[in-house]
Image 1 (cartoon, rainbow, N blue to C red):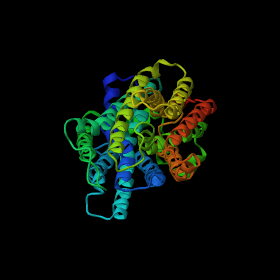
Image 2: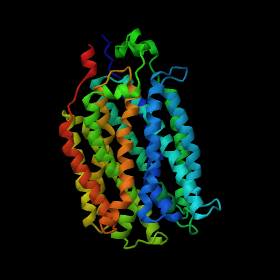
Image 3: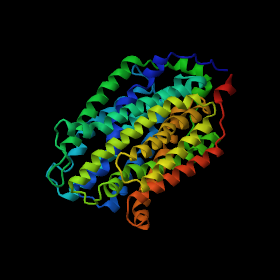
Image 4: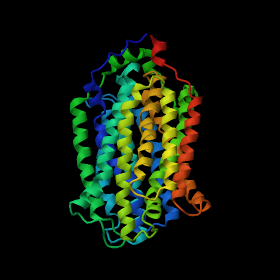
Length: 440
């Protein structure tokens, strides 16, 4: 029998996730600018999706290891926080290198390889830094408050996204150059990555100051872990075989969702450059202007996510709000095909923000409620595969699907909308269970 975790104050829940703000700035800079960076260096538009294969592939290898290791870690820094430190340290270094891929005097091919490797390390390190916050909520928050805790996390995540998405256009507005010699990335993008790295460092420091992790004995008491269970060792394949059905059904929903957003990150720049600015020339001023506007649209998406994250806890039924959110996002993606005004696109991306807010909060709320504490980190690491695998599949197929849609990148956004609606339908397969209730 386990002890029931006590309710926590709003500010304690806030502190558990505040570091997500800095991590998400890095993630937003990556998702909004990677296509722009590689296209500027000289990548073919039909090959852009392939640059996204290796990062999630590394994630699916690294995250389960990090999760399993953190379940068995305890030192003066804590159980989960050491991995935040390692991930953030690598991310800071790579954020300073990646936007300079075209500025080291390398050939186009050499710059592509350098950028590809840097992107691999950046995505892996960002995911490594993100995971501790998801695990901390699962570790320390009771079932009644998990919805609120993950909604706070979603709010902070999207606040960080706003900063990351708007950084290039803000720096351009204050006089930082938004153009650069052919093959190089504009200073507005490069300096944005530097600022993001600095904020990430400050957020990591904040996390270490304000988060107190449960010592092993206290953790065992709150999660019903006996001394015999503490010594048991279960392999990852064994854990997968005994995973609750929720793991797999939510994972199916995740497959459609993350495939959709991979296509958004990959093709939005080219899509709106085509539909709004009427260009497909990656070296044109119009394309770079569209690149800045992508940051604005993604910021609008973040605003929509922040607003919707506040509304999500008001719904009593997790599945209802999950499916509704994904359906709204699907409508938003499909609407981009019909819109040629840059400001009307705000409507589309506000709806897409609803889906993003649910994707950040609902899968982890539903999954962690179904898990006991003993292998929480390992299961969350394995669950990261439901984020990585769809991105790998979508990236591998993107170059094949794009010509089938006439070569217009906006068609990939329509496909993203169809995928989200499919995900909304699959929510009906999810059955919520509560491991904590079973232990009492």
